Length: 225
Image (tube, rainbow, N blue to C red; front, side, top):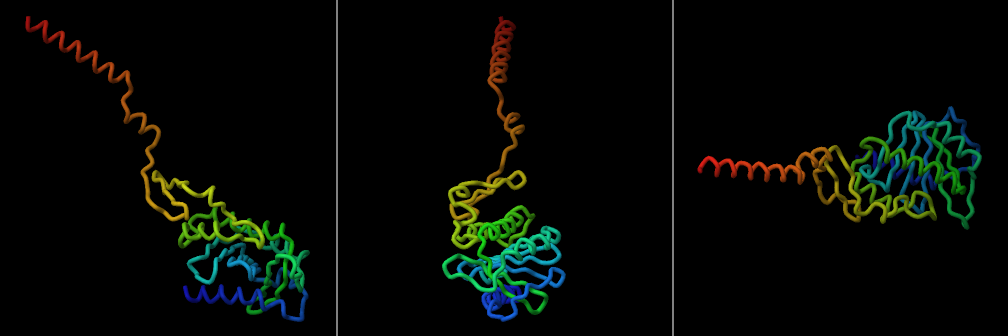
């Protein structure tokens, strides 16, 4: 866990420090091992690996990150989306993200100012995370971050609180009930529709019981006479 935290901190620092280098040539695709995206204004970092796996991390704690498996992304597609829009310097008047292109132990840094490209890549990563089986250490906590902090500078948070609040999530035949901040506040058993129908006798059933009771009483009285 400590090693992963140090790795994420190092990458965040590198995204700020790398653009200071004088060599601004963009590495070729076959030289790259990872592509990192982050902003000094936001706590999020996206890391895309050449095997098609990726990580979306919040801050420096390893437990506040989520992974998607190999072959989830086309590494070449991420590269091709970024390269035409990368700049060696930035304009202070616009929101931007740092992009680190790593060939191994070394890398080069650039800036991205195109909001549409930022959204396409970072939102695409988050969509993959939310659709992946068990990518989180703590899903409720991670979703809380997504409701508080945008993935792209200047945007609203990725998840809207009013859409997430008071919504439960069905897991098997149990319903996970979440509070306003995304924390799990309880579990309710989900009753299948078929079981509901079978477990609640209809009016016809009660009417039948009543008729049988009347007939039985009449037969009893007749026998007694």
